Length: 177
Image (cartoon, rainbow, N blue to C red; front, side):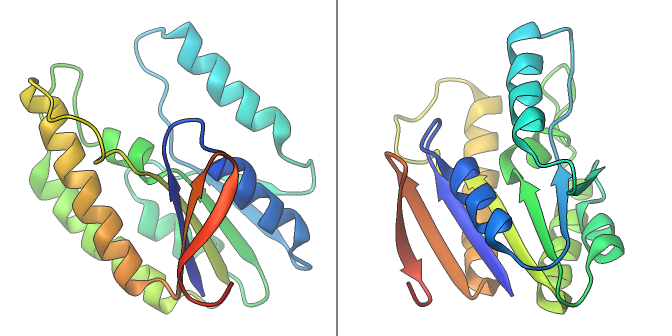
C-alpha cells in the first residue's frame, strides 16, 4: 500500500515517515535516492544526519536511477520500504552541466508508478513540495520544479494515502487519518 508524504524543506516529512516505519511490525528497508556530487560538504552532512537517524536493524540500499527495480527487489509481503526522496531521485537525471535526461526519466518514472501498484508490502514515498514559490529565472530549476510537480501528482494518483507535512504536523490529503 503506497503512501506519499510530501512537504517543504525542513517540514518534518522525513522524520514523520521514519516514525511510521519505526511503528511498523515487520522488516523495514530504506531506499536512499540522494547522490553525492562535486564535494558538497554541507549536503554530505545532511545525508549523514539522515543515515545516523536510521535504526541498525533496518536494511538499506542505494536506489540509483533504477528506483522501480530496487523497490521490486526489496519489496516483501509484511515489509515496509521507505523511499527518501523523490526529489533527490529526480536529480539523478540531471547532469553536472544542467542537462536533463528526459527520455530516461520518463521511462523510469513509468516503471516506478507501475511498481508502486504491484507492491506487496507498504511503501512510504517521501517527496518535496516545491511548487509554492516564485517561478525561477533558471531554465534548469523550472524544469526540475515542473518534473517533480508532475511526478508528485502521478504518485499521489496511485497512492492510497497522501500526507502533507508542515511544521512537523501531518495533514492527511487522501485516505484515512
